[in-house]
Image (tube, rainbow, N blue to C red; front, top):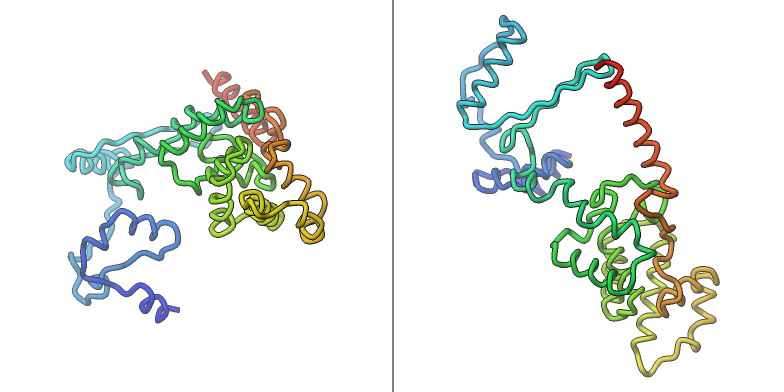
Amino acid sequence: GSEMCIRDRPPTFNSLAITEPNNYVEHFIDSSGVVSWRFFSAKPDCEFNEWDFSGTNEEEAACLFNILKDMGKEVYTAVYDDLGAPVCRILVPGYSEVYQVEDLIWDNTNRALDYREDILNLHALSDEQLAALAERLEDSQIDDYTDIITLIGIEFDENTVWGQLTVLELKLLINLALQQHEEALERAESFMQFNDNTVERGLFYQAVSAVLEITLDDELQLGDYLVNLQRMFGDQTMDAVVGSVNGNVRFYGLTPTNMQLEGLEKHLRLIESYKKLHAARAARA
């Protein structure tokens, strides 16, 4: 195992490769980042000292916070003791977090506010509103493989199409709804190549891709292929595919919802839990 890791990602003396932000992320995600040869030196960087816990909690905390202050770091703390078990959360931008400070500014949950309402009301949007949503998603440079759960901050059942939905698939479904067949074909191919989804969803887009190619080719007629496509993918899937390509079926697999979270039981249960927490806080106030 270790021999394979050294061969695949050998250590390096290149400090830039070690301190590159994405290298930290790779270590954080699955420990696959590059390490320095210096870790294997028999000579330590500093002399070993036993931990000194002689101070009180308050003294130790003051000492650590002063160290961070001397380093020019801002410390944000949040203490939760509403349920009788004290929990302290500490955030030190540029020090405690694996991801860069810029991510805290630009890649935080506030961006959900730009998309949540339109995505939850997807089935009710006009063509103009759908086009505007697609344009905003494209201009935002949000990674195509960002899942919609993360983007809009809503918990969907992970076993549903909503729960597996990514920005890429959302754009693809909008392309189909707007009859943008060339763009839809390109994204369908990307979906099949890179997306990890259910077998059923993969077959749906495999059939979509085939029907789009036939539709876009002036020398081909869908009727010549439909019987055999139905044999390969099944009548129900092909009805959804043909309907999606001709615009009669919109957002196949996504059950309609809205800003009231209709049908989203998982998120509604989460809200109920928060209501209990707020009630407990009010009772202690």
